[in-house]
Length: 435
Image 1 (cartoon, rainbow, N blue to C red):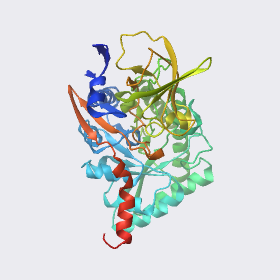
Image 2: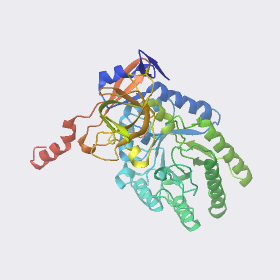
Image 3: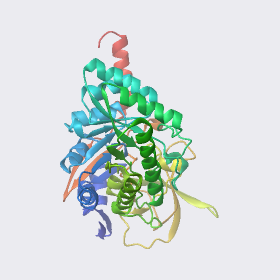
Image 4: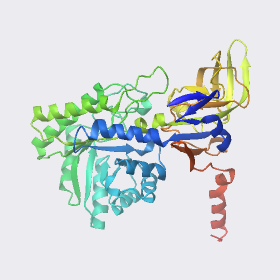
């Protein structure tokens, strides 16, 4: 995937120093070829191995209209969590029957949007949403297929900010019998809703399969209990995503099959033991598909050495284009793209340019001696970097360049300073009656 020529770092076969010079920095770089490779691994290792199963790309990791088209062409479904993500899919022409709409607090307008476009699945996150969606579907004369998101009460080994399967979480319907049975009964009795099954998600960037096995066992046991108490036949089980990727050399990621084989074996064993029909299983990888397919390029600015303490190397981006280190201590690897032939004799801390002490991208990175103008490539930034980008300190968001074969093209244009004022100017025009 990566190599060097002319002492430069190459990603997906292209020279990153040259790319930085052409498009400027900070710059998100995404490889279409690597994304498609991961999609095809999902197809080979999961969809082809388990006929009838489904895979949805979790678009919150990274979404654009071009990304929608890539995912559609690879035959995957699309997981969205907001009206904005759904709108992007609509504008990209993504097939709505292959859309799964999540969200722990969907607005009435978002539910109306989901119904008007007849999305394939709405994942209901709380009992009140059943009533809301039933009313919207009834008004539209629509029949909507739903899954109920439940909390399997298992904890994956990850940062607490990206744990979602534990008992104490904002997501999903608790397994307390009185709560879950009432929700299921309400859904079953809703004339415009078809309860197909359950969804769970246990966290993000997980490296163990055991937590998925435990979650499947809990939810399949729930299916048996609800079959006995309410006569519910569960046709679908969505097991979410969260598969870990390699951010640094210390990480040991797995192929998707490491997780999916364990999930499917457990589903089959539980169905046999509990005398249940085997449900259709859906997975929702996002980070695993796009994370390692992206990098971010920066230009080095100020280099500050504090004798006996550390050397700070500041770059022209930081917290606005990668909030994850500040938000939950995410750790990244990086290389100096224009000095690949030089030994890493220095230890530096890579700092962002924001007026914020916590704006540190990487602590204690081994590099060659650095100077102003060097190009730093931070690895595995394809997931949750562009999608979480912000305008702190009024910094415009970076461009996104898509690499396809030996071609590079602008996927998302660089935000300008004038773009930052656009809403203010529009508000002024509205106030003046000129808009």
